Length: 263
Image 1 (cartoon, rainbow, N blue to C red):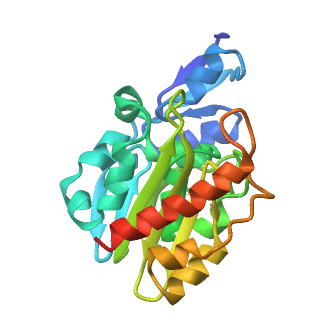
Image 2 (cartoon, rainbow, N blue to C red):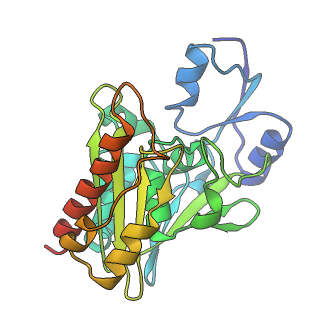
């Protein structure tokens, strides 16, 4: 690594001020520290967010859960009230990476990084969650803007994410065994008036699939999902899988998710 200084602010306001001046936020460090070790990233100053108490905690308010940005994956996976009311989100968190990653990685760090194969963005977009920041609230549909790109401004920090609890929801993924990232992941959430389907790992960022949503809004069945043709033209093709294979996975995983959701 290159030399850097480490700041440990006690408030979101102080952290945002440092980040606005060019420092890099350090949440769980699962991406940032690895890139620094490889000298792919060389920030002069890091801002450790772990000492800011207002960024932690999980609470239920009516029909939604608010999860602090510094909540670890294991915190989400093991939260009893969340597991009872929104098991799909707890299950997603329980299967991110390996145990070491789950013990250190944070929901805010994952969402802010917006890796195109990360699990959490599919839950945020799939539920139509709200990203709460140090400056405003951003709807999930407006937050994710492509490969490692979000609506966050330079001096803006995610403080929490607010998830509306669905009537039914399931996250299905096929894990890439070397990296533990999903080759493709599909989050299906059914509410009283709408079904949302978010896909990760298949393209240059997380995205909703309009065709699957339309079909499942008409009939929430695996057969309905199976009847949707998945266009492979904009999907990734790499050494792990072709675009056509990923397109087939989107269909198969959606069918599995719907079958599981129906019990």
